[in-house]
Image 1 (cartoon, one colour):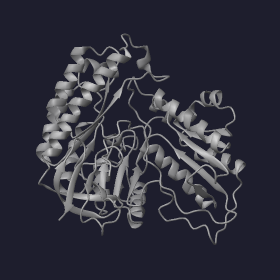
Image 2 (cartoon, helix red, strand yellow):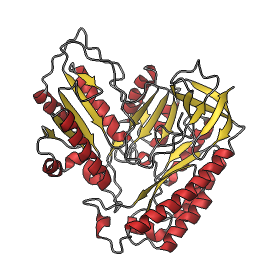
Image 3 (cartoon, helix red, strand yellow):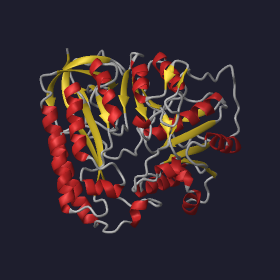
Image 4 (cartoon, helix red, strand yellow):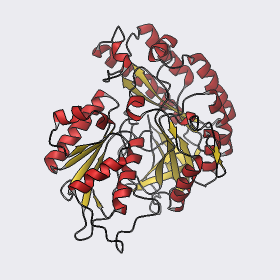
Length: 456
């Protein structure tokens, strides 16, 4: 059983899980879902609509009448990966419909792959369906094509991403997400809760709350209340926590009101886990990023969170090699990391992104310096992770089982999100476990990113 170091590319989606093979004569569509978990939710919505119209979903290219490629446009490297995926789909299938964030630049896509059938932007569900209808006409059979109550999911049955809003009101200089996906648009709280209820009723044991800016949820709605639910992240977290599933919060900006979430974690209503994109620690670097420059106050907030909820796990991502980053600024980041002692850390080497304002900043950092700083950062983060996990040896942890094979069970603690954090492995007494089980284990071994334990 291989170890699973954390994925340092938060713009990569989890591997999709597809459903049963098609019936005879059923039209078939393939799906390649790139990008972040938010894009994965978009893919699930597209496929749910197609399943409702009688389409089957193919896990490979050969059985599909056409293939949808849901792209990422977050970084230039992600754009290149999207173009490569489109090219592979064209080579293997020949009939390709492109959607997603990179679809906001149709000329960029058709310039590289003029033979694609259609290009649509993010969240343009109707345009995707129109393109599918034209390429592969529907042939529904209402007596056979039954749609699960929870819709089509591309993740394992026991966990699901729950998107609560779209877009972002921030104007970070390195990011073009607001240009691609627009300003913040929150879903009504009662609609989010109803979706969560349906997922839990269908067997989901863990809800992963996602958006571009989770802590800003409901700002655009002026935190209105409708049908008994208020559109505010604290109220929503409390409502979701009442459903009996694990609730994990992602992409939470450290606004002051985030401290109101910590008591909910201490009470056990939501998981003691915060995914917060700090990005850097030096105030001058943060200013050039157009982000809040209050790293010292952030350390005070972290200390307060830990005082209120000692078990809280903190995950974050950072950028090294940002334009103008001096050695002194980078050293400040390393010192801050030592003091903050974050549990899970990912890191980007800065890249120019077409349309981002950071491209025009002076003093861009040479690639070899970015690489050297990235390695120094990750070495420091790895040492912190290793020490924190070593301290868990001998403790008891509640874990959720993700998969079981002949070698053992792969699980996650409350401190680990799927795909991006570590695992806890059980290699003895696992035979009766199944995915979705939540069990208590005693930790008996620790590595740099993963734990090993036995069921108690």
